[in-house]
Length: 247
Image (tube, rainbow, N blue to C red):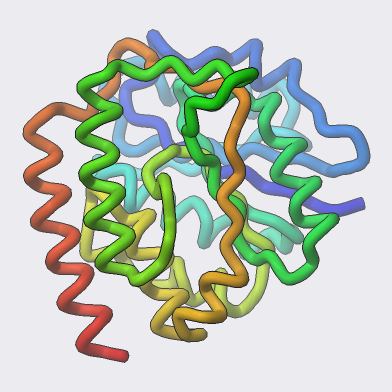
């Protein structure tokens, strides 16, 4: 039975964390564990997570970080801790469940059907038969950003920023999360850049699978602000300069 561990970064999620949704969710045929990373929260998040972990230690664990270091470092620290526990697959998922957990079995099907795939990324593509509810302003800003990211990486990637990703555990996965990221905002891009640097662009193109998900919705209380787009552009330049010069 494959072991799957999902890292859930949490910063002041007391009002948004749907604890019951995590409790109810199961995957047939897979052993699933959630590792919640409390990123220095100042509200009641720590208490809620501790209570959840105590209710079923076989399915829930908590990593407390003393200071808020941002989503990128929370995810990285969580993935490192997860890798030490020996799963077959490790990933991360946004705490607000904008991507519902019911999408996760689709990720696992890709890995079962395509043994060459190393990473499965959720992609928010508005197609008939799918329910992708996204504010128009964020959609269009996201498309501009995605075009710049695709050009920088040299890969036809559609959506690097959806907060649902899963990785087959390998030395490449360990290397991708071994060192702190340059970017606090678009570390997902840096994960790909590290893989491209390690294995080459052609190998990366064959190893990454973008999965158009069926459901996604904007959730109130997001910590992403409009000015963060400018920070993301700055970080993209830093990533491009650092990883292209190292290849």
